[in-house]
Length: 512
Image (tube, rainbow, N blue to C red; front, top):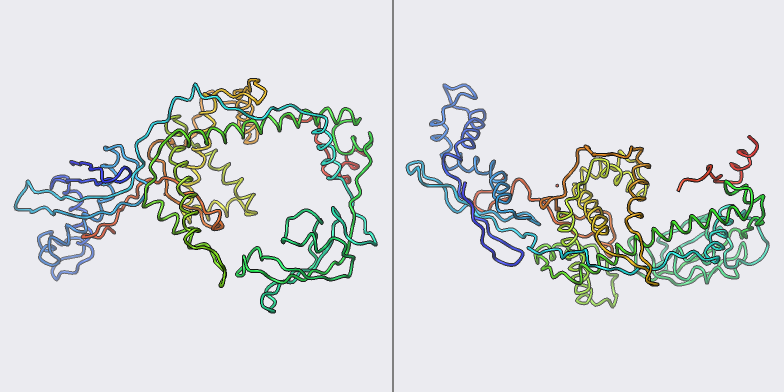
């Protein structure tokens, strides 16, 4: 089989593939066998119809078309592999020549136009220096951690006064648009001042007592009327204030594995220090991504970009009568999508250069965590992901993350005070923590079967179920096995002892 490639654009090529009649023979034999079981010819049993009779009945061109349709994907995939290309989308395939059996030298020829990952290089990272915030732990940090811990053991007591900031209220809410009720909920618990529900709700609740009702205007956050301004009626059912436990040794024994407040604070200091070190890793990762995007010029495939923008626009619901500038919206979505696609292309190349491997454990861990975040059973989430074809996009996401962590081992990181940050130790701690969570031993050689993140592990897929403004990034994709043809339609830090979670649990544990 011969193949050649012609560059049409920096991110688009035309592949020409020639298949000799000898190479075509196995596909023809399969087509004849299949047709022999399908056609009915008097005097012949099914499965025993000679090829010459089939040619007379359906014609050799039809047999040839069936053979080509069955094998186009295989031939295309072989050509892509030999030419070392990374397709980002489905190809457009066209049969341009069919072989003539009377001329053994004639071949089957087809072309495939497809967008590919552009050629570019990741620069040497050994000289890269990143700056992150210092991990110094202050007394203020410890005080905040203590208050958070006290908040976990706080109790709520009903009060006969208007609601104020930090109070917990039980409310009934009703939303109307144009005088028509569109939604309502009852008995919702809400902390005044948290800002986690509708805009304007905190202001409406401030000063409102149990049994009182008020209305306010606010843009609706979800549903068919998302973005539209609605009239919200809120009724307070009860007002409760949060009472924090006294900060004494009894509380330390209740809320931690320690007998005194001082010992508890010292332990919290270690926890906060660990959290700040982890944040240094997150900041370093983010800054490395930003630097790579700034330093590397990568052309983004126009076809893929158009697909992503179209998908995002289709998910945007603009309320009737809104003054949203649609042209500006499209421009903004195009710019953000281009930046995200560029970042994905760079991270895919980085992962390939780092030769990272996504193991089965990696994938299972990723999906279990995603299932928890989605509030779904893990097995149901896995099944749904497989049916939706999202698994390969998960592999790509994991590969990018592992590639970044591998790259961070090559860079130099300092804090804003000029002190060196030991990322190696942070990354080693992360590895050990992940293995411990998975119940794995410290392996010398991981023989787990996995997915090597090479140049072919890209997938242009967008997970469903995300908001338009959070439309998923399109990940580079592995070529499909059956491209569609135009002329011949072709038919991816341990505690000393567990701290009690609630006051009840703590008392029970102490009694034992």
